[in-house]
Figure 1 (cartoon, rainbow, N blue to C red):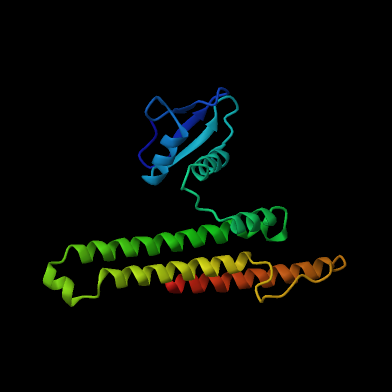
Figure 2 (figure 1 turned 180 degrees about the horizontal axis):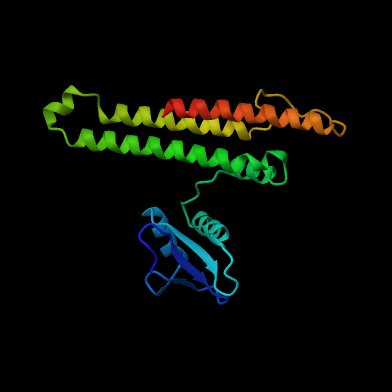
Length: 198
């Protein structure tokens, strides 16, 4: 059994079965999705090689959830833009940006839940004196839209409504380095803006 703060180890066997070493039971991808939703930490290892395969298993869970009717969360333009970043010079900054965006979004969601819980715990007279829960919902929706718009701006190839120019000749390494530095500064500025919203 793992120590209290250590993630549970899942073993994946050649027959695709997943074994939870913490509970000594076989589990499904749906069980792992439930663990993620409950905030339970786990890693997945290939039973034969011991290789950490957590990333592909989590990706498989997302794939399964996206294929369930009515559960699509990833819009097609986002998926296209994400695919376009593979092999691109931006690939190395995308994971960090997405992670920070999701952390900011989760904080906003938690703040909204707390506001709703607080509003629902009041008596009828208190409710009439305070802003309506719908106002809180509108404010939360506006903040969430702003967060996603800021995140999506990063993935828009031509943010100023411009069009693609004819392909440029191969740039020198120094020019590429300057461009990468500029992009990093833009991402840092966007992160500061996201943090100030939270």
